[in-house]
Length: 355
Image (cartoon, rainbow, N blue to C red; front, side):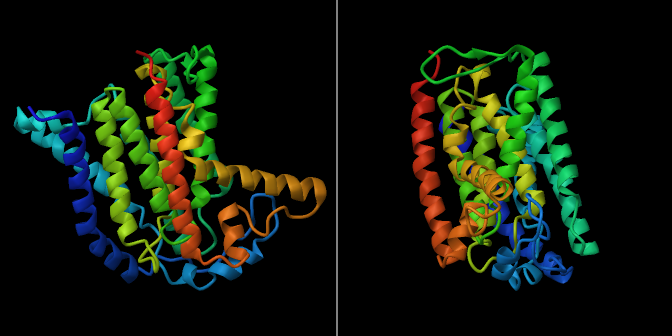
């Protein structure tokens, strides 16, 4: 038998190496296919109207840098999971310890990763082939919401989850309302996925978040979930290696949708079902995603009520870019903030665990 730490570290190292090896192949395919936007810009923003400042800031890179780089993340993750599952199936002893695919902890996160990847790549393919935008926002939100409702039902009906843990106090029992609450959290995390807009930003932020949740799951004794989260983090770091400025490719929907759905599953899997507080610390651990959602909603509210903008551009990381901060400065400061917030969230989660 190997140590519990090795059960997490070995698969994550394999995922990183695999991602590094696959990235040049993926980049070659994407560049040959000219898999980038045909028209720069976002078109209409969430609150209606155009996005002229964002479009001006990104008009050149968006029509020359391929999308669908997120394929690297979920392919590396799923291949790593399949590899160790097959090795454990055909052999035993040593490989059984490294197999992190199991029904109790990782089926849902891996399913969500794959489902988000498929929905996201559909959007990306429509974007680069039609040049008129991919799936509408309503359709994407519907897909995410349905997956969230199904997963919420599974946690409620199959796993008996009826409460949400609150740090340092008794869990909050909400009964069947856990189903719509799960969908709401999933949609909120997906909305935070719009952080994918600057070279290296989303990759660094998501990698740190999944590392933190690996630590939370490890502290709860959920070693398979910890390994799964660490594998996703490592695959995202492999993506980040090729996404730092100047990016070889962008994550786009197939990456951000896969990651946000997987994150929702991991957060709930590390909550009451494991005697932890995975959901309660999510807004802190994923602070940049929280800021993305909150500042976007604030911008929409300000425009509707006061008929003017609160920020030059929303989400707020584009506001910093618009007022003159170099993109690399915004990105690296977000990494620092995510690390600090993640350490704080991890500390709370470990201290608040049910004995």
